[in-house]
Image 1: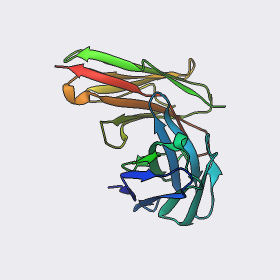
Image 2: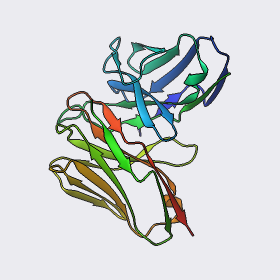
Image 3: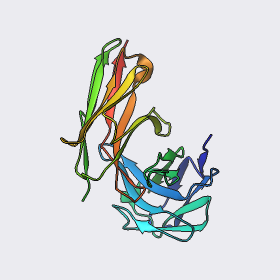
Length: 116
Length: 112
């Protein structure tokens, strides 16, 4: 059974702070993703990684960076948190499919971040 | 860029009725279409998926249909139960990238 964990369920930070959100998966998945979830906007992709040290921007990368030093771990970094980054952050992982890269994504429980 | 539109944004049905959620996508190369259910305070979980070489797939009370020509797909839930109440997301693959584009979500309420 795939297990994706995130370092915190709830986080409160001050404007300007540097914030680290960590995600770990235990299924040796190549692909890992960071989304933010806001009401009425669905899940929007921030960054994804298809291998160690590889990363690609998603649809809303501004204000975020990522790090993938080990296959099982994918970190999202808010360099200087702002109030408009208050949101639910979801991590996901998947493996490349036999017929192509489209494969089921498995989600972590989410981190609800409040920036004051 | 790629886009997925999902309707309706909210849906309220009586227990035992059917519910239908519809999605359209823009990327004609998309070939994988999963549906996720997210209960309050929990993570999204895959409930059913369909690949482009199949027109319909069923799993007990849920079914998904795909019309590749029209670029739309739908989730059908029959004999709804209160535990079906959740937010449902559709998604479409972005060809050869491993990425998914998600719809905006549908909040389904099943009234006892």
